[in-house]
Image (spheres, rainbow, N blue to C red):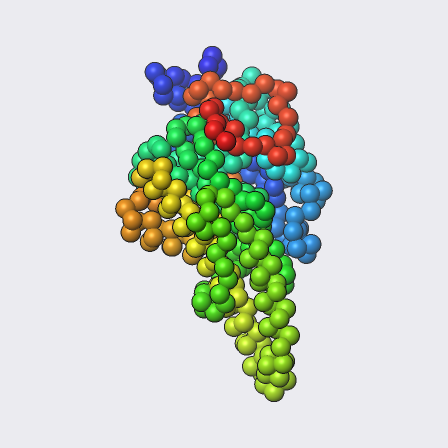
Length: 372
Ligand code: KG4
Ligand code: ZN
């Protein structure tokens, strides 16, 4: 890499990367030093603008990204105390995600890289999530290859065998809804709010996870997942039970208790639904680690913020002798630091992008040596 501000000693690359992430409804810019040190990581969420629609409205998302992208980049540089002239490269998410949202980040990244004559590094958003595990503030121990990564987000649920930097084997993925999508849809059906994951996570703490016996789909059937059945089971259970005479009678006879009763009903439903999803995710991750002889299981993606998933994976996997690596909460959901970290390893391999780089809405997990 023949570029200013990058010093290369054997295979160690010393550089400061400006990273940009706009794949969905978070506008984020970060400055990451030498691949693992976060100098700044600014995230502007649009959740308030999408809430009333019960989900992300792509057109609103693109517009909001345009409004804040420049101030967010300026804030990231200022917080990092880094000037544009100190940067060594610009990394940016180019997919998968909402195409209109991706384009905003991509245009900003191209403009900065082109005007400063810096390398542009296109990063796969999914790869970014995996690399949240390599950021210094996250490292419980030096993660060693191969490891299993359970990547669970709003759009993806994947079990990945990470053999080396950029060398991924996708062992399984969801055949229908992603785990986060199931959380969001169930919360929307129960009129709990948006985004559903954190709301269900919180409500479930008041409930009994054994209250409703939901099946654990596709357990013992390889590494693929299917969550749309549990989602439908929640809907059916709720329709059937909420409508029964017992519930209505209770509400009529004891109106002062009706609200609490309904909350208990919802909490039990949330806890049972969450437990079913988490059981499947944890069980399959441990099976994969056993089969592929990995010492570590890493979590990635927005759903890895789920408190039950974090607790159960840690307890059950550690009981079987596996190390568990979980990003700190603010690095689980979408952020640019993870993109800067993944971008650093591309740069180390001299894998930069040209300025024709396009946004790819359905980009697959592409490593430098991928086995699908
Ligand atoms: O990775 P992410 O921020 O964006 C995507 O790339 O999709 O993930 C967002 C997803 C949403 O579906 C959200 O409901 C879910 O992560 N999520 C959670 C929790 N926090 C966020 N799901 C379960 N429990 C949580 N605590
Ligand atoms: Zn994400």
